[in-house]
Amino acid sequence: MAYDRRPVQKSALADTNQPSPEALAPLAAFKGAEPPAPQWFKDALAREPERGFVDSLGSKIETLTWGETGKPGLLFVHGNTAHADWWSFIAPFFADDYRVCAMSVAGMGGSDWRERYAFADFVQDAEAVARATGLYEGGKAPIYIGHSLGGMHVHYAAARHPEHMQAAILVDVGFGGPPAPTQPVNPAFFRPPITYPALDMALVRFRFMPPQTAVFPCAVDLIARRGLTPAPNDAEAFAWRFDPNWWDKLDRAGVIPDSDTVAAISLPLAHIVGTETRVVKPEQADLFPPHTVRIEIPGAQHHIMVDQPLALVSAIRALLAGWEA
Image (tube, rainbow, N blue to C red):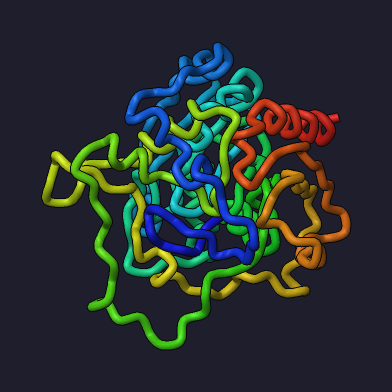
């Protein structure tokens, strides 16, 4: 989760420990080459998704889908400045038993940019995606799974439209919120995308927010590569696939849930947290309803899918099995 809007992001969270060079540039050692990958990772990527778009609110929303239509639905939602491919080595683990979709939030990944963004619009986008990609065809509403900012979106939707999902899984979600605007947004000050003249230069500049190392550099490399696109007006250069003005354009209503919002969540809810996270704070416990199931992943930091991916898969599987029983 990040609120610094630059592609190379500095931590906006208080921390007296200086990040290591490996955390500040986790792909620097590979100099543009792809890191080696374990067999499970290769096998997951071999199950390539169907890629497409769903129309919602006048925008095209990017979708990746796996599994047969007619099975129960799972909807994966990524975090800030990310994209649907953050789930492309996680989602295939569920494709035998579920119809699975990962979506790119409006303004990120391959989804269209908008003049304004709102949590309320995400509710409509997610429902449109779930309907269009067959997540309801198993006879029930899908289960939503959201990481970081995506989990904030899912939390918002669960409170206001519980009929859209049968349960929700939040993955390392904190509610720090973006900095409050002090004045109306002036389009003249919008940031242009930062561009890089070569792919290896862009990969070296990739880092997480908050900065962290990863047990599986192959996962970091994949999400970095698939997070790049030819730069505007220069097909030889590269830019990150997200609107650099996303937070400036955001309607902040609902970003921080109030007590009524929390009390409104009655459907099954779980929160998977990394024991080494710098995002989820103890004082935020009242932002989750009392019936929330909490699962801690030992050794995991905020971006659990890149340092403890198989533990994350196991935790999600355990929750799904318990809810089906």
